[in-house]
Amino acid sequence: MKNTLLQKIETRTARAGVIGLGYVGLPLTMAIANAGFRVTGIDTCEEKVARLRRGTSDVPDVPDARLADFIQSGRIQVTTEYAVLRELDTVNICVPTPLNENRTPDMQFINAAVQQIAQSLHREQLILLESTTYPGTTEEIVLPTLERRAQVGHDFYLAYSPERIEPGNSTYFMANTPKIIGGITPQCTDIATAFYAQFIHKTHTVSSPRAAEMVKLLENTFRSVNIALINEMALICDKMGLDVWEIVDAAATKPFGFMPFYPGPGSGGHCIPIDAQYLSWKARAYQHHARFIELASDINEAMPKYVLDKIVHALNIQRKPLNGSKLLILGIAYKKEVGDIRESPAIEVIRLILDKKADFVYHDPYVSDFVLDARKTYHSQPLTPALVANADGVVILTDHGDIDYECVVRHAQVVVDTRNATRGIQHGREKIIRI
Figure 1 (cartoon, helix red, strand yellow):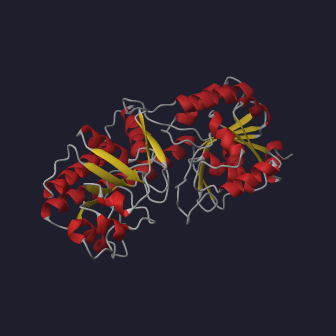
Figure 2 (cartoon, helix red, strand yellow; figure 1 turned 60 degrees about the vertical axis):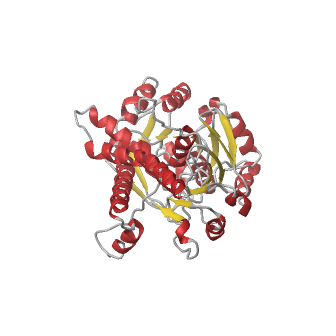
Figure 3 (tube, helix red, strand yellow; figure 1 turned 45 degrees about the vertical axis):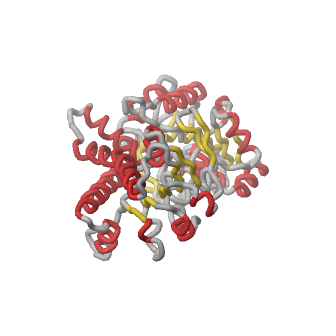
């Protein structure tokens, strides 16, 4: 006799739920609903839930119109009430996993979600953790709490499947990005795989949740160390009088054995700066010092100070001190074409500027405002020739494609370009200082 939950999944009559409706949870909710499931999204932020009920998306990859269609049809419901968990057959946990002040994993959001699930756990329920975390989280934190209520692999099913969302990527999205799945038991893996197969083209199973958790950390640590490598190359090229951008472009012509990464003011987003710290922290529990990984993090975290030095140099050329200068910051998102400022190196550059008694205004077409250190709110200014000309210097920290960089260079006194956004500009190159 076929498992009841499996039947519901394959006929898409299972009631699905997603805890956490941010950059991961909301696109996941949409993908599940698009496959024909009824989905309930749960988030503790009342303002966010109210916006979603109106069909207003917080995530650029989720269009308002599409969200509104699902909300109005009842295919997606959103709530702040965890009591709805009793009615759900599947539950995906997509909550934040930040670092504490001492740079160790902060599990409070996972713990809170799991405690709520435990109170409503029932037979034939699939629990899926997607939040990025360290190897062992599913088995050491999630499983013990849930097994106080029921038996895994018999009464309920538990698996880890790391999110692979890249905001702003129009080539690879939820459906066509393979899904890694590792269950507590073989049956947990099978049922989790059956669920994801309903809305994701390809799945790949691994031997355990710990293996799946490590896959995610490897993917992002790979990016972290390669970004650090190219950032260090930028520092070396700067001292040698070489153009690192020319060097990388030339190396990228090799059709094998090389993958181009590019320098910048640091690494950003939730995953890259944080995941390596998770892996390094966990490695210490096994008496292993992840020196290579920690060195990469140190290099990336030092890049904002290098950018500050470039700003000081640019102003010195004009015989101006940083103290008292007014800078125009172009882009504060951690990457182009997104509005995500989580762990953005631009924020650290701004802190350093303010510490040196300089002032700034900013323009970012994707970030209308932001709050710095829970103290002051800053608003994006319209990018006009006057705004550019009135600044003592322009600093490009995010290379958004819809900014007229030719106009910026024409009216700027000096431009510090940390992203090579001005590569195609011919006139006024004497004003441009690149990292």
